[in-house]
Image (tube, rainbow, N blue to C red; front, top):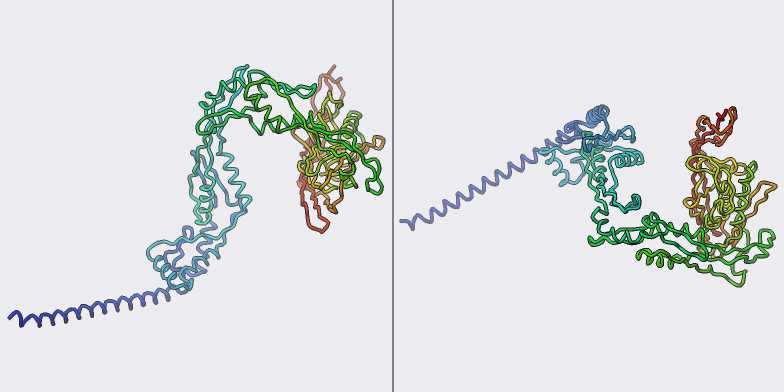
Length: 592
């Protein structure tokens, strides 16, 4: 019986399977039709509207048409307090949108929202449309800010929060070597701060945000210095004397301690020589030791040199050898070291120096100068006259003129020191640096270092506009230029005392360069403060003596372009000067 029924059961099973497949096909059909119908209705319903679920700032713009969305977002944006509030340690650091020129482009932002689901790529558009049904899509806003103003705000916040870590350091306290404790610093996470601010702009979200601030560990801890205290004590135990010929320079305990460098490598502290500070020391020592070779032009016709001869040999501190010798003596705690010099290369044939023609000339006048000032500027001019600068060499006015003090022949005249015009040794020497600066400008040689005066000095504007000045103050302020020609250049100077005139000339080998110097541009002029009257008990009552002179403040810049013979620009320089408004000062006698 079972055998007879089994074929029928199999047929029934096949029929049922076919019925299930049919139902599945029907279900799939209705799903597809429903999905197509949904997409059709979705497309028709949002054909001219932003797809649902889209937000700009705190405004949900989904379902709005373009004008509606623009109106809603603009109303939100106009009532928004556009101030980013960043907090750290309970303090708020604000960045105001008005201070940085924050401006939103509402229409472009809405257009970005309107483009969702309308890219033309069916897969991307479908994904965006489906996503908008189940989650919020936030649109980044279009905006603009003044980048420099924003950078300034970042810098201000860094300045208020950042604290430099301070390494432990040695100090002398009444002759005892002590340790100033290390201090941990802190530093704003610049990237996180930037990201927070930009996100606030993009999202129109100006709620408070916490800044990330990292600790900044000092390079040297107290324990590091404790481990090398004995070695440093040995180094500074005795003053060190530097010898050169019949001259000596002594370094005190404080001087030696200033040259100590403690470094930590593989957790082990070691004592060495501070290279940067020692280089600065050698710069100062070179002013006393170095003698540049000198020459003179004996005849010139139409700016062509027809006669040139050497006058003195030159030598300079052998810096590499001196550094090695000094370092060895320094680390051993020895009390003396000898400085050695090397001869500056000379040629037996003077023509090999290439002093063939005038390259540049600068002049200045000093009408009205007091006798001491005239004596100083003429002495400085004599001491800078005839310097030969080798190819590739750097000329230093401080090195050329030598030490400036009463001991080296300079008189007392007015100088700028500590924000005042006071009597001091060497007043007027800046007339030489100013005049040489003008000659170097004219010659088209690269200017390596130049410093304007603190305020406008009337002497330098007697024959040239403002901005054509250069100050020197040993050892920190210098005037330097580079000889970028293939031969030597010769710097000469001459003072015409009867006519109160100073001239610098630079000779060398012409290479066809052409120089264009602009007229100065003057901005931000400010009047001098009211005169200051100070009582002076050393002056008779009723006497008034002026000791400082008023001058207008200004920002000034001038440009120089140097062209090769083929017209190509070699140098494009801008020389800026910021002159302070200067106060007239009078001494009022009170002595009965």
